[in-house]
Amino acid sequence: MKFILLSAIATLGLSACTANLSFQQLPFDAGDGTINSPSADMEPQMADRYIVFSSDRRRRQDIYLYDVVERRLIDLPGLNAQDALANHPSISQDGRYIVFATIRQGRSGISLYDRQTRQLRNLTSNLQAQVRNPTISADGNIIAFESSVNGQWDILVYDRSGRPLDVPTDPR
Amino acid sequence: MPRSLTQQWLNWGMGLSLAGLVVGCSQIEIPLISSSLNSGNSDEQPALSGNGRFLAFVSNRQGGRRILLYDLQQRRSIELPGLNRPGAIVEHPSLSYTGRYIVYTADDRGRPIVALYDRAIQRSQPLTLSYRGQVRNPNISPDGRYIVFESGNRGQWDIEIIDRGLNIELDKEEGERERGGAEAST
Image (cartoon, rainbow over all chains, first blue to last red; front, side):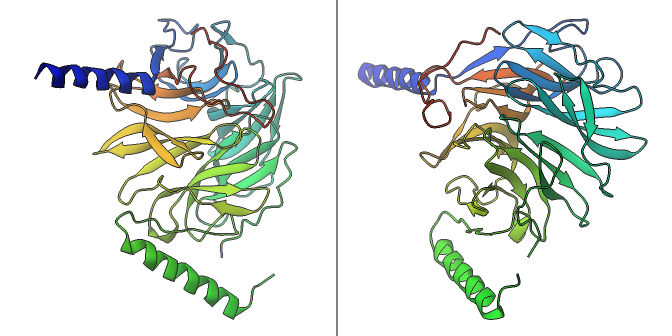
């Protein structure tokens, strides 16, 4: 009996070792100064030291950027707009490019923000369709998102300059 | 270029007989080889590998809801044996740098959990079985060590991190491979 118990404990210990996962709580602040706030903090995406996410902490849904190493929020001047809801952000691992979805006067769009030049670019202005769920590769070169152009959700793949990639995307 | 009708029928025939073979086994996995990224059904929730070569997504094609992987360079889909199980709902994939690790949510008896699929060993592993509280929208870091996700622990959505620790193989481009990674101070 004792032996069985010991081996059970040993097995438990072993499986805990092989799993070796740890859950880490990120900072919480009753104001809006860090990654977690009393509002909903959502859709995190991590690349290197950066976590980009959306939050409705200022009674509007905006994009925020958190630096895991310096444990602080980073300003994104010119990214969030008064007249648009922003969601589903994604960042390149050098921290330079952020793609995200916007809804402005009922129209959806995909925007690319360049942190170096602080320029914002709409990648889907000539697309007559709903768009959502954008993502950028960690190397910052490829962008993918969903479009309703064919009456269902399909995936479009662009390069960073906004040109569609040569991928066979037509349904059979 | 439209392919000839015979060629199409041959492909369908091969696909169906393969499917028949697989149905015979206890683990049903339907091969979904396709040269086209999109299908006649909804294809959603795209996620790119860090190097931009692979695209994971959720597809409703062929009457199921599955995570599929597409190689943008070679223009073909890639099999993920052991990832999609019959009856399981999978959502929200994300990929590490070369697409080795796929993190996603799966339902465990109706409760969503975060799971990790390793393409090198073709196996899935649950990450949040013992975690109290709801989880959603997981996302793996390019090196494969960290997973950020939304936690409902506080009665609202907050952001937390899973650290897979130093004993994992990091996913880096060839030549940059090493064990472990820099400790993030969270």
